[in-house]
Image (cartoon, rainbow, N blue to C red):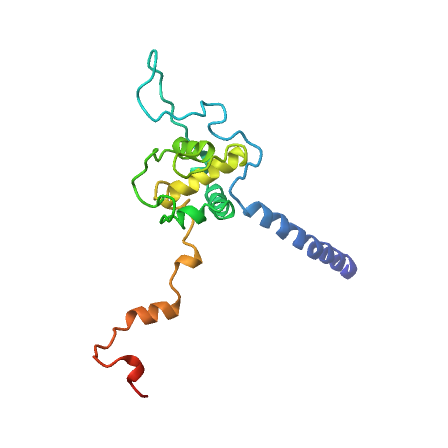
Length: 192
């Protein structure tokens, strides 16, 4: 009787880690990442109209919605691509440099996802190069989602956090809190 009870206990203790592993896998729910999908705008007209003037009868404007704007993974991939494709070189970290700032509300060519994607693909006069044949379409839409996140045009739970490079260090915060001492004597002339 003891050997049967011991054998059953051994089997139960061997099955327990397997059961815990299966329960752990079932409890993990991750965001769905679709790696092979047709990006928004792949079937729509790639040219974005910049003027309401057009020949012939009026056509209906279709607004494209990007699934990447509702997906934290897509926006964070756009953030990574923004740095890798050296968008930072012209646009800074969104504050502008050679290129226009991307954190404000003034958008020359529009702030809709299709406008930003068209700017990336087709380029713009006076400096924005065309990346049409150089970037995969899904990456264009991920970049567009990240650019919109810099202006606060996506949900806050999707937008990535600030870069460590943009956050002040403890030493910078300590020196900014100190007030300078007013004196007519130059600091170099004061002896400790």
